[in-house]
Amino acid sequence: MSAAARAVVLDVDGTLVDTNYLHVIAWQRAFAGIDLDAPAWSLHRQVGKGGDKFVAAAAGEEVERQHGDALRDLHGDHFGELIDEARPLPGARDLLVALRERGVASVLASSGNADEVEHYLDLLDARKLLAGWTSSGDVSNSKPAPDLVEVALARVAARPAVMVGDSVWDAVAAERAGIGFIGLRSGGISETELRAAGARRVYDTAADLARDLDGAGIGSG
Image (cartoon, rainbow, N blue to C red; front, side):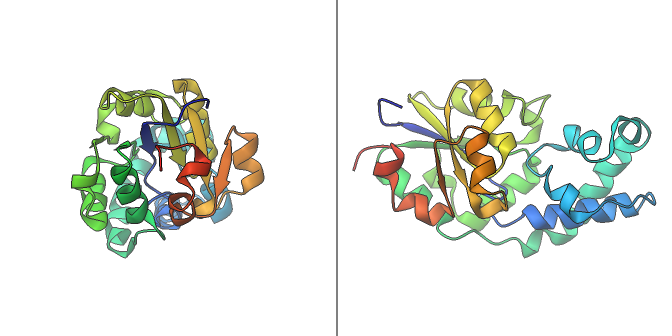
């Protein structure tokens, strides 16, 4: 971007909180609950999509038609049993603080439900650092559709904006919403894949990004 970003849309799972593999476990248990085998690696490839798209992507349209709602309910139950194991990723709150200190408006674009988002806001002690946040209940279509990103952008007046996330689905959603994308490897996706999906910069963690906001073109030092 030619001008420094004045707003940042932040993914949550795998970007700020270490939950991607907890979601994999929850989805694997959900599929086992209807006697379907779902390898963990294949489930991980789909993390970042909302439940409305996850089942068909992971197991096909027929499984979605027959079991989609039941699988989403089971995933929610199993993830609810695991969520207390979630921890902030390195530098997650530091990044939020650094953005606030630079006058950058930060807004969360989460595909999680409202209760999960509330849990993460408390975990990160982030409420006073953010301009707003989203949850799955705010939209009909989850990532990689741009809806969540567009809702998040509508909650801040500042422009230009950039998205920070950990999945290729974040990158696609950002592109469809017309903003740039910065990738983090903390969700388990490689730099090569994130760059191929459109990331203009890739960092290992939020901590690394927080130390290089000038290089990333976010705010002004």
